[in-house]
Image (tube, rainbow, N blue to C red):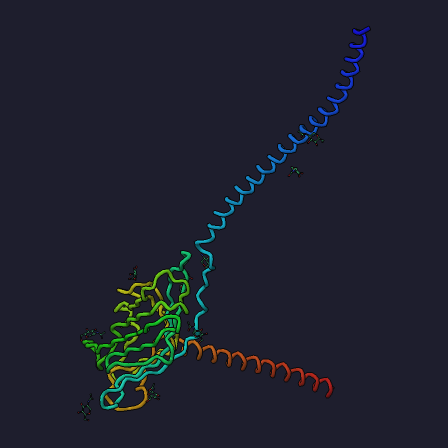
Length: 305
Ligand SMILES: *[C@@H]1O[C@H](CO)[C@@H](O)[C@H](O)[C@H]1NC(C)=O
Ligand SMILES: *[C@@H]1O[C@H](CO)[C@@H](O)[C@H](O)[C@H]1NC(C)=O
Ligand SMILES: *[C@@H]1O[C@H](CO)[C@@H](O)[C@H](O)[C@H]1NC(C)=O
Ligand SMILES: *[C@@H]1O[C@H](CO)[C@@H](O)[C@H](O)[C@H]1NC(C)=O
Ligand SMILES: *[C@@H]1O[C@H](CO)[C@@H](O)[C@H](O)[C@H]1NC(C)=O
Ligand SMILES: *[C@@H]1O[C@H](CO)[C@@H](O)[C@H](O)[C@H]1NC(C)=O
Ligand SMILES: *[C@@H]1O[C@H](CO)[C@@H](O)[C@H](O)[C@H]1NC(C)=O
Ligand SMILES: CC(=O)N[C@H]1CO[C@H](CO)[C@@H](O)[C@@H]1O
Ligand SMILES: CC(=O)N[C@H]1CO[C@H](CO)[C@@H](O)[C@@H]1O
């Protein structure tokens, strides 16, 4: 009996314990399993966060790459209009010994801070000041308010001694220019060394030459490449040029002009074209008059018949 009771009691206890234990264990386990799953998921999430952090770290260098060139490099401003100025040089007596009238533009390739080569342009302002003597002209003007310095253009002339020349001639012997690297004209320039221009002597002599006591005149645009000794391979554009060095006679205007072949070319082109157009117009008028005349005479003929 005792054994039976004990067995029954044991059984009941066992059942009760079994019911208790599973009820306790099952939630614990399932919860544990769920919790373990949850941490794994959460661990995966931190991993993703780590990946995100890594991505962010990768993004940071990408952000650092544009950093060397953060501010976009501005392009040089458009070239200014070339306007001709007039400059006189007078001697101590107040007599004019040199007269000049021209427009000049420099085109200068320069390197920007982002490594690109672009063309900057500088136009000789009509307000430039002049000094010199009967054989030279120095023009100078200040930079914009973005920097300081003085731009200069120096032209020197010599009298030539051509063997066969009936008259003494002059020609341009040197033309040099020094231009400040003005941020207003050369934004984001990688160097501040001033640009130095120089025309080759043979180019200068071929450009301006005329008999003494006359002026050299060339209204057409002419472009010359710098240089023989300059620091840049730029271009100079001249227009509306008239110069007269070595003035001896006291007068106020330019002497008789020796014109360049370009200007003569313009004239010789314009005149034949104008004459041709006039002739063509005349021919058309004559033909029209003839046709109208014939029709009228036919009509008159039919009417009379
Ligand atoms: C664990 O990750 C899962 C899935 O991303 C998410 O739904 C759950 O909220 C996270 N648990 C905690 C405690 O952040
Ligand atoms: C430099 O900047 C200019 C704008 O002035 C732009 O046209 C050029 O493409 C840039 N060059 C480089 C290498 O970024
Ligand atoms: C100035 O005028 C005087 C007298 O006319 C003359 O002797 C002198 O040579 C002149 N000076 C110059 C620089 O032309
Ligand atoms: C600069 O100007 C010259 C002459 O007009 C031209 O040949 C050259 O291609 C230009 N360079 C640039 C970078 O625009
Ligand atoms: C230069 O002058 C312009 C107007 O002429 C002005 O707007 C600009 O602020 C000036 N810059 C400096 C650096 O003075
Ligand atoms: C210069 O003169 C020489 C001799 O008088 C003559 O042979 C030559 O052709 C002339 N040259 C010119 C360009 O007139
Ligand atoms: C230069 O001389 C001419 C003629 O004498 C005069 O019309 C002009 O105003 C002068 N220019 C200057 C800048 O002195
Ligand atoms: C250890 C553990 O996670 N136990 C959990 C068992 O399940 C119950 C009910 O879900 C949770 O409250 C316990 O925290
Ligand atoms: C034609 C000529 O002489 N060009 C030179 C101008 O100056 C630059 C810089 O010194 C030289 O590189 C060019 O050869």
